[in-house]
Each structure stands twice: as structure tokens, then as C-alpha cells.
Image (cartoon, rainbow, N blue to C red; front, side):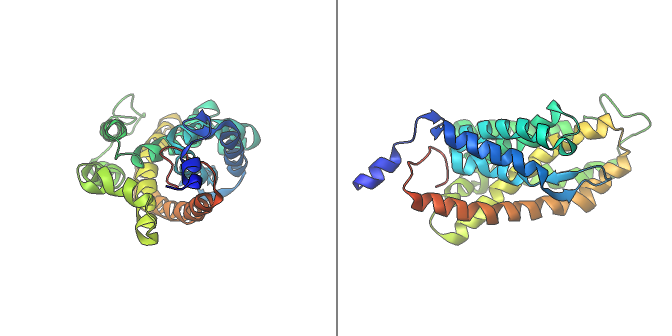
Length: 262
């Protein structure tokens, strides 16, 4: 290993190896991008902001800890400068601003047994919650979920629960995301981001179903005809943005950040 490589291996002092300045700048970018709409909500009333994609990218370039901290910063900035994208205020800071980074960080680090266990537990817990909240407990007045509703939810948790027990999510996704092979890198990043976003989807949308008393039919429509294809499209967009950023950082000569994919 040459002197340049040894220098790059020494991560900058900060959080999770990412410098405080890098985290702060990236968090500010996340916050500003909350002004940019990508997809409208099913049922109307708002948009999925572009900041969701960049929040998901954060753990890829800042490492899991740095990416989550940047998401926290971006969430609070976004709440103040783009209140239309954060109608639930502080709750939306968590739902829209932070959780995409949390779940992508989990899936991109499953080669570490500690992260794998956290990821598995989070998917199992999310799966269980799909069957309970909000239509069973605490309940939405006049609404009873049927088999079709529960069937429509399986797109968002069943594939990832199964794949977590296979090498695909246990080792291939984090490994491929860090390879120089372009095809494997794109596939690894896409799968990791998609898995994270689809698990995030439940936590992002279920509180709205309860607070605004969404009919079961509207939630079913959201699942089947909206987010079942919107999230894959967003994952593609996120991957297309992320890979050039990762490549630029690899060539930058900056110190590597632990668990980042560059």
C-alpha cells in the first residue's frame, strides 16, 4: 500500500469517521432539496421531495453514522424552509427527513453481524406492524382491513425478509456496492437503496393513514398503483445520482470514511 493509500485510510476525525464540516454541508443540501418535488402523494396533498433520495445517499458517502446525522440536520432545515413537505412538523422530520438514511444504512452494512441483526429485527418488526397499525390498533373509524389490503403490503416487506436469509442481502449487496465492477456496483446500490426505501415506506405512510383516517381502499390503491412502482423508480434515480458521487470521491484523494462505499 502506497503513502497515498495509507493517508486515505486514515478517516477524518468527526462522527463515524466523517468530518463535522462534511456532515453539516451534506445535511444542508438535504434540507434545501426538500423544496424540490419528485412524486405527488397518492390521494393528493403534497409531494415526495428530492431530499429523500439524497438522504438515502448519505450513508453511502458519509458512512452510516455520518449519513444519519446529516439526515437529522437536513430534516430540521427542510421542516423550516419547506413546511409543505413536512405537514406533520417534527414527526415528519423523523419520517421524511431521517428514516430513509436509517434504513438504507442498515441494508448497506449487513456484512457486519451487528448491522445484520439490527436490519433483520427492523424488518421483522416492520412486518408485524403492517398487520396491526393503524387499522387493527388503534383502529380507523369505520375501516376494517381485508385480505386484499394485506396482500398489497407484501410487496414492501416479504421480498426483503426472504432475501435477508440469503447471501443477496447478507453479503452480496454490501460487497457489490463497494466493488470497482460497474455492473455489480449499480446492482448492489440499487438493491440496498430499494430495500431501505420500501421498509421506510410503512413508517412514512402509516401515521398519515391514522391521522387523516384514510379509507382502507385508498391505502390499498396507494400500495398497488402508486408506491409499488414509485419506490423502484426513486431507487433507480437515487442509484444514478449516487454512483457518480461515489466515483468522484474515490478519485478525490480524501480520507476514506469507515463503512462508506468509496
